[in-house]
Structures are given as structure tokens and as C-alpha cells.
Length: 120
Image (tube, rainbow, N blue to C red):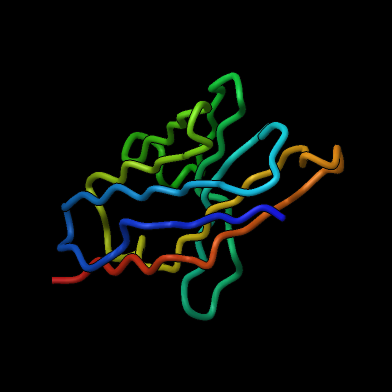
């Protein structure tokens, strides 16, 4: 069993910054990729940013140049630094991790979500 716990969401004014964190724990052998997704009211969940164990990152076009994803492999933790936030960034942000469990089976785990609200 793999658990992901997110933190760092909240209310911020347009143009402000927030940093999300997500820590993975449990029966983990290795984590291949970690990422952040978001789901706004009435919309489908979308990929915001992803990062591999080798620190290769990709971003949604809507956040390029404003968001930065990073990870600490030793702590099984992924971060999302969000700058120049816009109202359209308002959503529930979910952490995702894909890897191999201690039982040597693949896992695809999700966090519970953290709400980011960008509003004046």
C-alpha cells in the first residue's frame, strides 16, 4: 500500500505564489514518475506537470514559465512551485506517483487533493 499526502494549498491573490508538497510513503521499492494534476469545477482532471526519477520534467502549456516541478528522490517527495498565479489556476490539485511496490508489483497512487483558490 502506497499513500500520498499533499500539503500547501490555500487562498492566494492573483499574481501570488504557492508551493505544494506531496510525500509518498508505504511499501515502495522505487518511484518512476511523480506528477501533479488538477481538476477545476465542471472540468476534467488535467496534467499540470510531471517529473521522472531522472528529473526530466514536462508541463502543460498553460503553466509553462510559471510553475516548476521538482522532487527529492531520497524522501519520495515532489514539489510544485506555482508563481504568477491566475484565477484560472483555481482547482483541486492532486499528486500522482507511479512506481514499483515492495511486492514488486506496479502501483499508481493518488493523493487526496489539495484546494488552490486564486482570488482577490
